[in-house]
Image 1: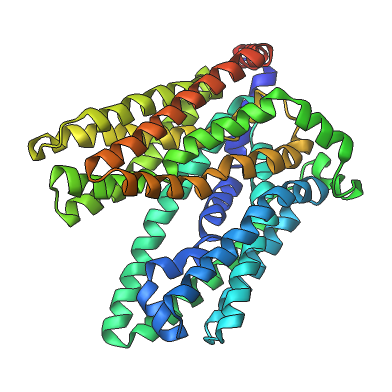
Image 2: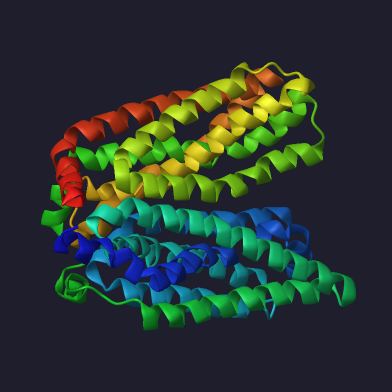
Length: 428
């Protein structure tokens, strides 16, 4: 093995403690904006909200987050990632502590709106840039595979522990005390993570010079917009994330078409979180060996086969085992593809210093499917009754997967030289 490989091959391993902190931060910074959904009734009761007001909280967060995805990329290229992530985690946690005092609705609404800024604008693009900086060019797939898989494991563990604590305190003290404990713990963890990120993450020389840049570097923005890979990456994210934000329709499909109980249907949905780490970890390590975009393409093929399998499997209760196999294929492939969303940037030859600007374009475009998918699903289910509505919607998802596969193949063609250079570097 060459000296070059020795110097780069161990970069991710050397930065593993920092990566673990970023993984946990990347999961728990979103615990506060979303925990109300898991404790819906208790949250509504003790904050004295209507269902409309509860929905407005989600709209406030989502509305600000959509804009933040775009502007956040420029912030990541303008200010050091460490400072942005630290600010995000500490402020997110501090706002959580405000909720412990059960303020009036306008304050709760404002907090959720600000969370749309702190968890996205000053956090997400900076986090993506930080993950890229922790690994060499040959380790990008592994870095993002570990990141996405690790986030899945973190969410599984923390949700189980917090839910258990909530149940115990609800039974022994009161629901309000349990809810207060949840908010306090999540808030304290976010502040602590902010401190750990500040102490552990080391800026690269390029990042240390970012404060001399304008907020929006127009020449760089024009360069990114002219790159066909930018638009292909947006399509790749859009088409795979469509499945990520729609897979839960499998639960009602299982109960309505296969006659499964509500418990089995819910288990089909929860099963995704157990498959997620497997899909991400396998994809990450395989990507470093075979190439991130190639793994992305394979993931799309598996996703298409799995979706068609769900559509074509007869709705017979005795065949639910076959449905489970196809669902597992969908879950593994959609998360494998998600873990490659930003790993492929190395193949696209985006320098680290313009990661934020590129992310500012591809992220809002790619994740905008989260706005469209529920509406399309609702229209399909209302237009076609019973199994037909679900199958039409799943057919649309399969069609998007085909488009994503085509975009990935085009990406591979455009990045052929860069991919060969990366492989050659590994072989030295």
